[in-house]
Structure formats: C-alpha cells, structure tokens
Length: 339
Picture 1 (tube, helix red, strand yellow):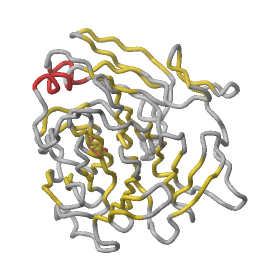
Picture 2: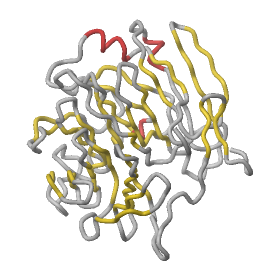
Picture 3: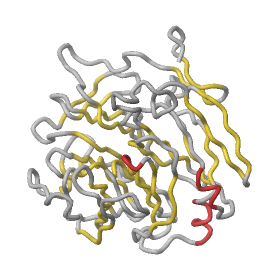
C-alpha cells in the first residue's frame, strides 16, 4: 500500500483504505476487534473486546448502538443468519449465543463459565466460530482447547461431532473459523496446520487447501460460483516475524490454476478469494491458493438463503463434489466507498 494514496490491490480488484472510519465516542475503544458482520441495511456489527462488546455502525462509520455489556466475556466469532439474527461466539465463557440485532438472546448453547475438559471432544472449550447449513443447522468450531467441530440442530440440540488433535486429514490444530456453502460443504480454517479443510455435512473429509499461513478468518459468498475470502495471520515468532510473503507481511502472491495450467503474479491487496468452478477432480487443482493481507476478523457480507437449497442432511451431489476440487483464485472487491 502506498503511504500517500491509501490504495491497495490492482486493476479491477482495487481497494481504498478509509482511515478512522469508525467514529467512537471520546474514551471508547475497540481494544481488539474479533469479528465483524454487515446486515441487509449495511449496518456494521463490530464484535470487540472493549467495554462495549457489540458496536453497531452505519456504512459511513457513525455509531448507532452498543450492547453486550455484562453478557460477553471475550468476543471471538460473529456471523449473520438468513433470518436476520447474529450468531455470537464467546471463547471466554465457552458459549454460542443467537441474538437479535438489538441484543436480545434467542438461543444459548453451552454453559457460561463451564468449559468442557481439555481436549475431551465435548462442547465447548474455547469455541471460536459458527456456520449454518442450508437448513440452518449450526456448526461450531471448537477451538483453542479442543480440536473438534460440533453440529447442532436449529434449536441447539447436539447432533454429532468430529475431529481430534493432529495434522492428518480430519484432525485439527486450532480450528479457528468455519463456513458452509449453499451445497452443504463445510470449510474449516485449521489455523496452526496452515490449511483449510473441507468436509461434507456428515463430517467426512473431502479435500483441503494448502500453502496458507495461519488462516484465521473465512467468509463464503452464496451462489453457484461463490467466492471464499480467507484472512491469514503473519509470522509472530521472533525468528521469522520480519519474513516477507507470509500471511499479512510484505508482498503477497496470487496463485492461479485452471485445467492443469498454473500461473503466479505478485500483488498487494487486503483481500482475496477462491472461486469454485466445476472442473475435474484433479489433485493438482486442489492446491490453488490465494495469499493476501487480511487480519483476523474478516467482514461478512450478508447473503440471504438461496431458494431451494439442498437439505444439509443429504450428502452433497457428485457435481458439487467435483466443483470443490477446481478453484480459480482471484482478488475480489470487498469494501469500497461506493457500490
């Protein structure tokens, strides 16, 4: 990014950085922003670790509302459901809460302040994020002191869980974020294994995206050729914290692979995406990767439920399975001053 013009990216995929966008009252602070989400009216929900855990802004950064004081212990995950509710994951008190836009709690999963035993596989011990199946079943990634994904029915009843600690397929080393697409596939940001793993609605491993650096944030667009936004962390150890081309540090690259052809170009951009395309199931095509500089909280652009979406209790169809393995990474416009 230029130090003067605030422009990042290139060509069609160009971003304008808006400094000091959020207008906070005097003495207020985000401290850490864990996650953000955007509703149909372009209201921006900022789930943070300050004294006011949920801050609501209009698209111009004007503060509209705040809530969550005394409710949340440590903000972590946030997304908006198709029924216009917020799913708030609190890794500090080991709960997931479904809330209205003004903060009324509609559903609470987990017992506040009572974590499951360390690495027990039971929900929850420092859960991290949620996702919804096409039928509004709730997936929870869990988490910092577990290595598990749990699936609940829409009323919060546990259906089943999968995963264990490790680095083999289906194992996790901090499942930090999770999304589901309209076909029912489940994508898990396996942060310390530097990959995104992909499962069917029953937790069966299908494939994974490699060559990432500590992927933390995920957002999946809807539609037949939806785009997945991935936020990575840069190196944090003294031995490599100044290294380039890792996560958010330095110059980043966009890898492109189509029908067995690969190309690579250097970019500077704060966001990137992987677009699903219906191509043959080739192992080489599974290694398509975008690298870009996005911090932990990846904003969610609200997507209504697709009409006629497949039942998540049914395995994804063969055509959808093939679409998982042919990806065309590209940089997408996420936030700009005008649409």
